[in-house]
Length: 336
Image 1 (tube, rainbow, N blue to C red):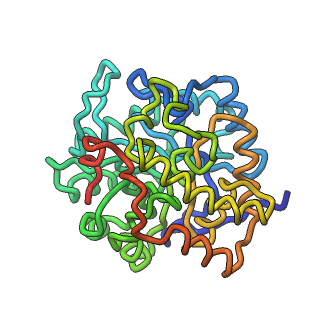
Image 2 (cartoon, rainbow, N blue to C red):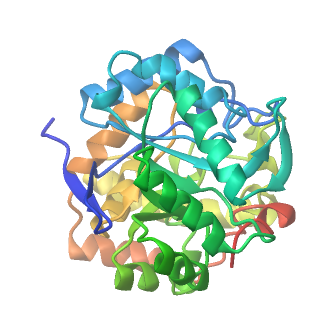
């Protein structure tokens, strides 16, 4: 395999491989499995294999577990910290008993507390990219970002970013401290940030786009044939994309996408990742298995023709209804 391509994430100096590894599925969230059960040994092997192939950008958050995911990463990178780039997130409040309160907290004091906890759990003295996971509606974004800016000045954080935010919030935050990246769900099946003009704002301000769930939360893999295929406590059962009639409409779209993938003798997942890569965005597909991290990184070698890109756009253009990315309560946490 050729060397993995590097890209500039934003214009603040952070250079990353053009694919990252989303680590969320390696842990539970508040007792619920994410995309099925995880095995710690296999998860660590996956992180190590990603590095061997040039994929050294890991995405985590204190929410995952909570805290378990950062501690898992600490085990995986022990003795080799500087070989990796680590992005983590805060904002879902976790109390001193390590329990999620399901409140958002972007207050200055909490920012300081959260970063110290993440540094300790990751076994490091710096975080490459630190995100606000969700906006706290009760705290001005300016206060939160100022506290994050202080962490950069202190050398605890290299670069800062936001997750699932509106153009208005991005502009307010940017006035306080330049943002390196904004993370949002983005895939062939989820293009709200295009519809809402957020990508245009990010391009104007030269902020990097980080696409989480670039495989539509596993939908594009094609392994889920029916909603009932999902394990009982899998949180995707609550997501409209995976429910009822909408699920089967989405399967029809996926079958058309697979035609293009079959012509190229690649998987639909690899095609979907190459499509994101063609836009210059950083995709962070999540996996906890060596096999899939290898397939995902192979996708970075693909170049799609203009014709192939146009065909994909015609199958599933911006504005196609595929079902919301969260249930009703989850959508309330997205800053629109």
